[in-house]
Length: 175
Image (cartoon, rainbow, N blue to C red; front, side, top):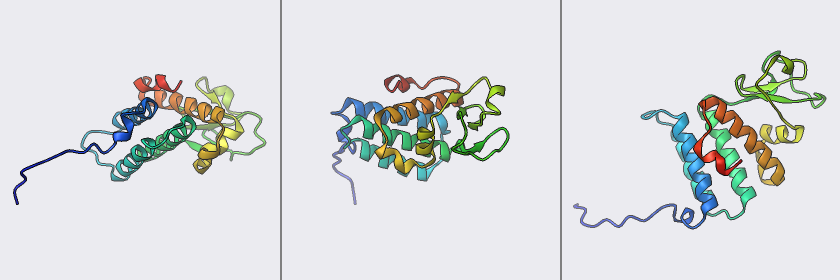
């Protein structure tokens, strides 16, 4: 057989008409490119990225876009081996307990810090118990409040910035 005609059909046409969905997709693409090496295949992540793009192009509200972006960022971190430790202190290994008075996250240490250990770390961010519960169970993202999604995305941007050594260019649309 000889190919005589080719009419390309854009697969993600829905992104062209929605600037917010386009920014969300470009941010995910930028992060994917930044964390992966050329020629290093990640077929599972590729499938998740395609699913992310397909979902985002049909999403009209910001909270749902944020939830999908957060979920994709968590999957990306998992794929590249940077899944944060969210069930115990990275310094002393104390299991997380709802009785912790303060909860901190350290990007350099890639996980939680208990109240006893956090004073030894300059680089850290406070995390609310409600937001930590969502991060520990991402299935809760669709039911999260807008303020929670915003705070979680801010934490992830901080973490991604620290891991990359510079802020992602598209992060400015989510600050």
